Each structure stands twice: as C-alpha cells, then as structure tokens.
Image (cartoon, rainbow, N blue to C red; front, side, top):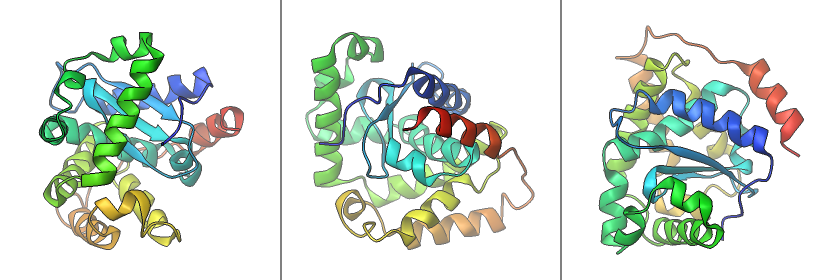
Amino acid sequence: QIGNRYPDEELQRYVNLVGRTVAANGQRPEVQYTFAVLDSKTPNAFAGPGGYIFITTGSLRVMRDEAELAGVLAHEVAHIAKKHMIQTYRRASLVSALQQTASAFDKNAAMYKELVDAATDTLFDKGLDKGYEYEADTVGTEIAVISGYEPKGLVRFLKKLEKMTDSKGGWFKTHPPLSERINKLDALLAGRLSGEKGIEQPERFQKMMSAHLK
C-alpha cells in the first residue's frame, strides 16, 4: 500500500499549517481538515474520508517551494469542498468511514491504516471522474490564490510529474492525462488569473525539507 505516517512531527506540523491556511478558504468551514504526510517514494496526494488529506514524501521531494505544496493541498481541499470525495466513497461503500472524524483516526492506528488502504484501493481501482479533477485543479488554484500563494504552484508540480518516467502508470492511470490538466491550467493562468501574484516561500520550504525530510 501507499505507506505509513511519516514519523517527523515538525514536518507534519508544517504541512498542516500550510494545509489549514488554504483550507480556511475552501468554502466548507464546517469540515475539520487534517493533513498527514505518508512515507512513500511515489509522488502522490489524495483526500480521504473524515476530512483527511494525505501527501507523500515523494511529492515533497519533487517540490521546490511552499506555493507548490499549497497548490497541491488546495487541489485536495477543492475535492472535499465540492463534495467529490463523498460521492466517490459512497459509490465504493465507504459510508462508515465517512462518518468518522479525523480525531478518531488519529487515536486508532489500525483505523488509520484501514482508512489509507481503503481510500487508495478505491482511487487506484476506479479513479476520480475527469470532471472532478479538472474542477479541483481550477478551484484549488483559486483557493491557493485567495490564500496568498503564487497561482502557478499546482501547474508547476504537474509539469514536473509529466516529465517523470513513472507518470504513465500506477496512480496516474486513474487520472486524466497530465497534459490535459496542464493545458487547462495554463489557459486559466493566462486568462482569468493572469494578473494574480502571491508568495512562493522557497527558502522556508527548503529549510524545512532539508531539516526534516530524510
């Protein structure tokens, strides 16, 4: 499966700070979001039941700044904001997991692993609707901008994934082609969001990764 929770608490805290910054603008303030770093070399991020959003160490290693991290986390927040995950997990009969809260998963290691395994099995097998992915790319980028981040973070990350040799199989076989997602985001950035600016924070991000990502 995808991996266990990465043991460095400072890294977990940092990702939660960035995640909660974008989640505050995610249109569903009633959701209690929790962000968790998983120990896996494969670049990946996904939203699970219970307001959980997971990102792998493989993704963090690909990134160069906080704007990219915020863009990826905001994409997952958008999936939850637009209720894509509720519909996806209900189709997969993960209704009981949807009724759990993030704090319940935190207190129960077996339940935590079950959540990660069930979510990845569902998403690997079926994937998300292409329309969901495109909408989350757009809304997530808008959320990142509203949160004060430079708008190109997500598309820069996707362009890096496109260049990686393993981006044709595994996780990516259940997503729309990266080239399609990139083209749509480039059009958004050249159009409606063309004048938007924001922070990138490469120094803070790289300092955190060099100190806490082994």
